[in-house]
Image 1 (cartoon, rainbow, N blue to C red):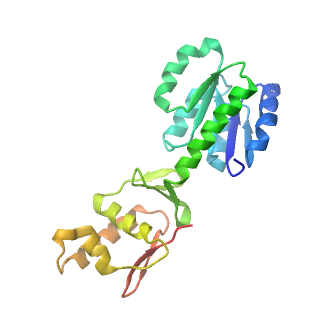
Image 2: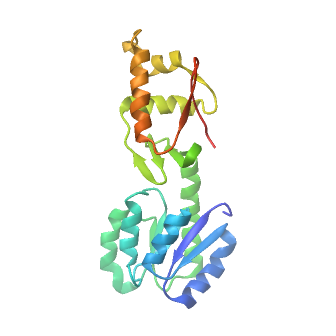
Image 3: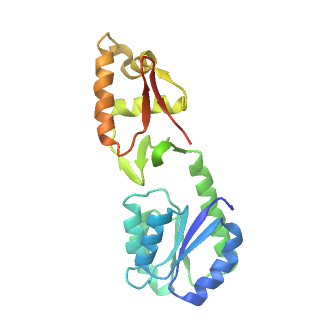
Length: 224
């Protein structure tokens, strides 16, 4: 578990210290926040692998924090802590894709079991997430490209182009292979021009370079 990081958000300092002490051996790093705004700042700065957050927080409540995070990150495992009286609020949280919720007071064994579940989820996600150069992330199952947490809208042929390069990451994929893979039965002598237009449109969507052109040979993408 030591390769993962956690953002733990709890306004009760004594309780937060107790839980962090229990969880610390399980994580590479634990970021602590005492209110909702601080939680968002730490999430944006560090992009932790998982989140444990109380519902009732000063400045910005826990559900509002989760809603904001879910706008750009649908993958991070999230566990919500609540008092028994908060049960009605949890109905609203169902649509936010929670890994679990725990009612206070939370026994240590229960917390550790849930953390184990979150780490398992992260481990499964690792096989579906491919880190690329310049902070790009490719989600294999979703066939989506992310840059710093933001999804980049792609056309069907742009997806085919990126998939082909990613399956042969760090290698040059020839123009001919790209054209045949993307256009298949529609392959003609004009596909080289169509490929040039596809690349031009795709590059306009990218904040940073993602792949490179090897003159006279083809294209290459780098996987970290």
